[in-house]
Image (cartoon, rainbow, N blue to C red; front, side):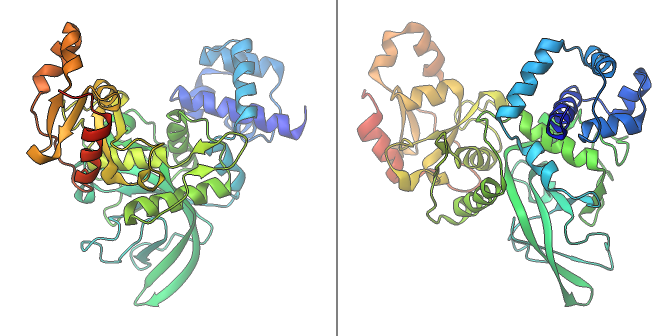
Length: 390
């Protein structure tokens, strides 16, 4: 077996374990394999014997054909976890870094995905080349709870006096699926520390910098990977482009949204969708539905119609699946002249069941987001061009 195939086997076995939310120690406790041997296999440093592979697959509840199908899928795509594993050096440390972004409440004036500052007298463990997960604390979160929204690497460190250190961030990027406290993290199995309280009190360091285990870092990245719907091939260029897209969305500058590759990808959609959903605190602006599987970042002026509005969060509303479909097809609209109230198209009344589903929300005003309110100009376009009329 070649080194490349060993790495593919190891990565697939690692992904399989993480998807089952099982720690390495749990695997070792229930199977005839040492922790060192399992770690070496998952890191692609050792080739699993046939008996060992059979044992692990039985433990994970996967057949050989299913595993080899997954192996082929991993070979065809380069996931985020796999890309980062190829970039991380053996001596790297891993951290969770709290950031409030560029706000008045931020004493250090951090800029998301660009710079991060701290005082080494409080925390002196971070070095150049280390990696981090970004955490937005509850005090600065639009949702009222903390969430993880990106990752990156510590670049050049500059000493600013009085113990203050400023880090330039490299290989930093936003997640295409923000990891929310309740939706994604309550059942996550941590390795750096045992979580004993349901409310997360005192779990992360109060000064905003927490060292974590490598398995925690890659486990969180795998969790982001598991929610990917676009099968994006990640490399350094893609990560940097996603970083630039995040900054573009936040600042309102123009940026390309089509990446030239074998498959043209709408690289900004995932990042934009999470920013918009967080602006609406992960709730539908009409129904109030908060189950993330049913939330859609719905463009007002369609994506294909105006490239300049593609990454404009004022051109996007967080809607539930049915409302998004009705809005996209012109069955409903929102009237900017009358407090953005929902208006039903006449054609809705031709389908009794559809009318029953939509009529309770007729004349209900859009719930406004925390930031990036829907553009009146975009809503008027939807009224004039897409809405089927009443």
